[in-house]
Amino acid sequence: MGFGQQPPLPRCGSGNTEPIAPRSDGKNRPCDPNGKRLYVPRHKGIGFEILDSESQACFVPDQEYRLLDKLIDTIISKVKYDSASTSPADQARTISISISTAMLDAGFALYIDTETLSDALIDRNAAGEPPRRIFDCDTGSLIFLTVAENLNAPVAMVEMPLPHSKYHHNFVRWLQGQITLLEWDMNLRSQCHAPPGLNGFEGKSMSREETLGYALSLRPNLWERQHQYDRALTDFHTSIILYEGPDVYNNLAWLIATSEVSNRDILKDEALTASEHAVHIEPTANYKDTLACVYALRSDFSNAISIERDVVGEAPDSEYQRHLALFKMVPPKDCTGQ
Image (cartoon, rainbow, N blue to C red; front, side):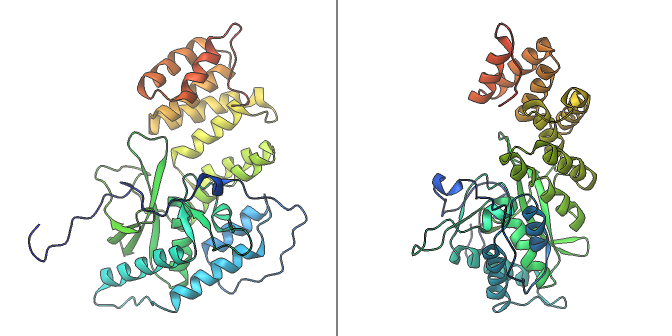
């Protein structure tokens, strides 16, 4: 690298930056069935709408709305977005740094997998301790989008697969019309560049409606914690209408294959169609494992064993090996309860 040259940008999704939250901070937040909203947020934006939605499944305390307000106040007191700026990329970079820095100062540490936005914004510290909160790529991106909306800044969330992983990754993209100004990875707290070759939903700048559909696909985590599987299934059905990513199809099929949802026998065909669709879009080991579990639910253990053997050969994960062992038992078992 020559004198005065900038180092190359990292690829989006290429790593994580400390601080990393301890595993103990990842426990599910409590749900208060008698919770009452007293605080009225001063700002608006997609994050507040998502908190309202998640509160229908598991009451979101006032503290979370207050924190999101405070983050927005902190950032808009330091930076502004000017659509007529002569250096829009520099402006986008400055705002992005400010957002990541404000979250770091507020005690956010990376925790994969932070399941919902309301799991990210809840206080993890005991009284008298320094603040601790958690986030990951999508929940961090949703916070970023909320700040951007309050700055009237054109930012979209983007999804991409992670190679050799069961997880997808999200980052944010600054736009100027249809032109990409800059991409920012919340896990890296850095500008990044999207890998080449992303197609379809992968690498797409999501619309606001699609982002809300994506967020709705996270809310089933809250229903499932309370064993309200039918409500989780309803959310997946709605999310599929708004958002086209394969995860929602896979997770719908997984819910049917593993949980005692109502009319489960009738839903077996839907589970198979959804799982096959996810595998068609992205033939990962994780999605093929779900397909094997769907076949097991249908008592087609021959197909379940065949698919799961391929999965274990591709990714020798202990969960996949456990599923294969279930299918080979005498009598065989499906993935219910897994």
